[in-house]
Length: 356
Image (tube, rainbow, N blue to C red; front, side):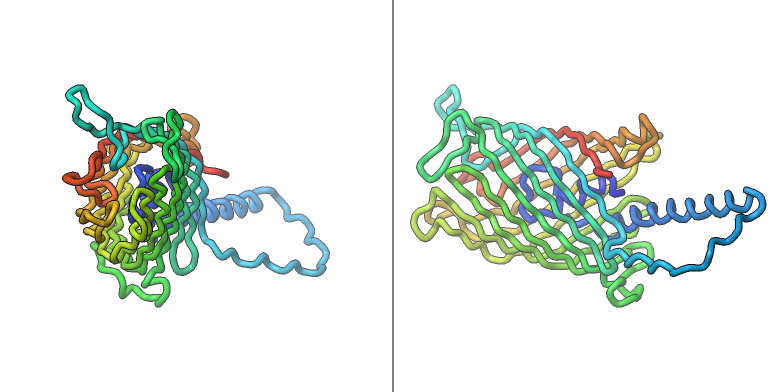
């Protein structure tokens, strides 16, 4: 079963345009493969125990009558899968453009608390990995809901953010070790994905983005460290813009994602460090009439994850708690000289549960 730490690496950094959450890049074969091997090991242990018990039970029972032999079950397409539901609180979050008047009459960035429910699924198959993540984010009233006619005072906005990420393993597809460098890289694969969002605000972003590139799974003693080097293409919407500028098509730009999950065994606790760092280079213009240039965007999140199930009841990878910090510079590519509230420094705390 995929640990919460591994799940967070898959979910949080793999977003091209991460929406302040657990984040979100695809966990490479290193992380998912380790989990799959763990399940396989348990299966082999079970077979061994059954064989031992049969030998110790005394005389063998008479063989059953020979009859029709049932066909073996069809092989499963997926060698491993995990489904998780989680809740987290994060704040103070930043939303570009949202401000409040300060005591001196100047506009100041307005902090926004958010409550987030996440549904997540990841699996491995013969040639790679897949993940699907849905964030449901509810903002405080500081980030008001609205429509094309204006805001709804006192009602916080709700956002749905869906992510798909996939990796095709070079070593698995070609049945070779040519896509590895001993002691440095375990596997090099093709990475691809998509982001879709909708949010009930006057801005009405309706983001649609795609990524395609290479995934490098580094050779580490435990856990995983992955680097994605990708092309990133985004389409969006600006409800405040004029005429044809409402529909926004950004140019394709490079994107870099580093994700990791590392066990902290030296603590003597089932504790791990998980996080991501994402860099998106300038992608074009934005604004009411596309008057502003986007800037280099950088987002980093680090979480401490405690496996409470293992600590309290000896049941690992079932119930976990986590806490962390997220820093977002030039959020969504916004230029702080032109757009207020583009820097985020948010605390994160939450719980997650792996479905049986």
